[in-house]
Image 1 (cartoon, rainbow, N blue to C red):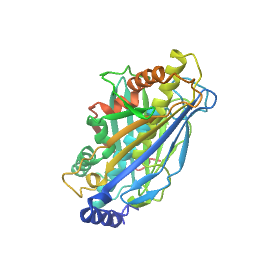
Image 2 (cartoon, one colour):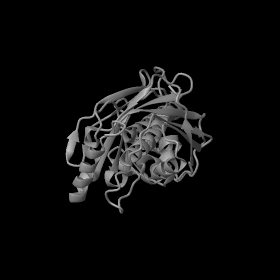
Image 3 (cartoon, rainbow, N blue to C red):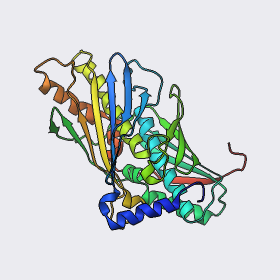
Length: 330
């Protein structure tokens, strides 16, 4: 076991998927709630790992880009960036471990500025440029969330028990710059530090036990979906105040599927990026009767304005730069 990475456990998962491809279908759920009185919060819900159901309970008090009351915490975009960077770094360390590479340290910083993404990786203990270049190439090809960033992935929208048409808006005005720095700890455990004022404590990331983790925190896919649900909930709060003038409590559920066979290269035909991504907006309990049509327009507008929704929907260019890391890194 190198880098405390259970490569034998991953080999068992690959064997299971090759025997039954359904074992590679991992379904994730994230929820978010925007309250005019308690601010913005997001959590993960039940997951389905192949044929195994998991309760999955983690909750985060998020910072609200729309400015409603709430504790300092990571913005929805920070959560999404954490999901992308941690997935990429896990893929890098996991791929290196499978090849016998021993890491002293590994960090990744992902920055979003004016709709453009920059990724920087620093690796300690690996001085061979050829090995590092090969690992970066694996990230670009097989990291599910990184591929979700660089490929067009549709996001469905439902409200009031029915589908709404997706946005046709090609560009959402970029918000303020956001960034996160993810540090590999051991095995599949990582820490993410959202960069910027008032972003709260470090965020724990880990793989589920079905992918050799210890459930130390949400996994990368759950962070990306939490960012999506939280951003849509925050936009709904803003649109609601501006459109109706009434304070409403909004709840959003975001779901998505990962074919783990793509990440583990168990099936050459597997799609690597997230699939079947969908948001369901619940009817506010404090809404006035007969306002469903008005609120449906509001939901469609909030969905179109979601920066995280566009991050997933649009194909982005996000090259990865890398450098060796010195022995004094802490």
